[in-house]
Length: 274
Image (cartoon, rainbow, N blue to C red; front, side):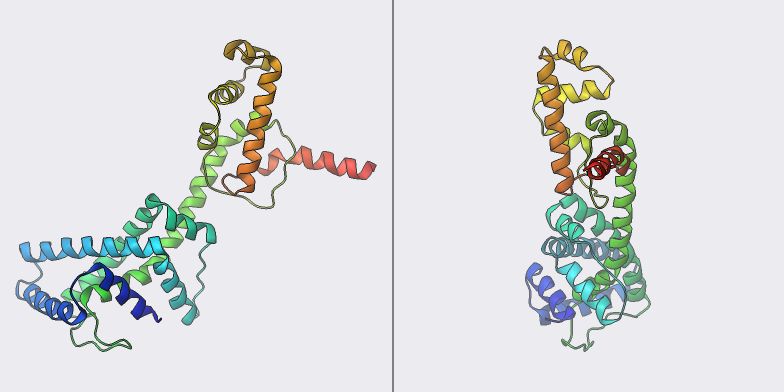
């Protein structure tokens, strides 16, 4: 299936009337907009309806992954460098908030140019004949959005990395207090679930022990405050360390490299002694 056919299929699923009826309706609509000079209530209603219909279609394409696949194929055919990390692809398919962030950026980039071309008499035409034949106005606009996806994704991915680094800087001291520089090596930086979310998955007693540890209390003080035995406090800290390691293996969190240095050096010494 070529790119244009994939876009047309997504539009056909979302809109009830057939292609010929849509093209005829769009031609009348554009003629009406030209008559009113692309101003006034008629134009405002057109812009709102275009945005709402496109939003619905693009959200479905992000959820299914078809928007990303079509954009990747277009870039490959033109020799443009474009890569989507598999973790980002999964997140866009599973997380509505992530889809909405990319969607807003795609529309903000594509909408002004599309409407500007339409006002200037460029872009879509009712008698357009592409590889798949004539297309309706919405199919043409979604095609513009596919081109905008590449830029929107890159901005979104960079923002994710910047946010994760900022979060990791805040979390370094928290994680350090719990890990106590225990040796655990990972090959790369991993971004994802925040420290608080992993802590929130633990039992209430474990959450209390970890929070008091972060605040600087000694194990004996924590035991008194939460009414646990000293050994139980140590056990819950050990369990949470294991939860953090498991989260890192699952690529949900990044454990800063400096927390592994001493453990790595210790193992090197052990190997040398052996």
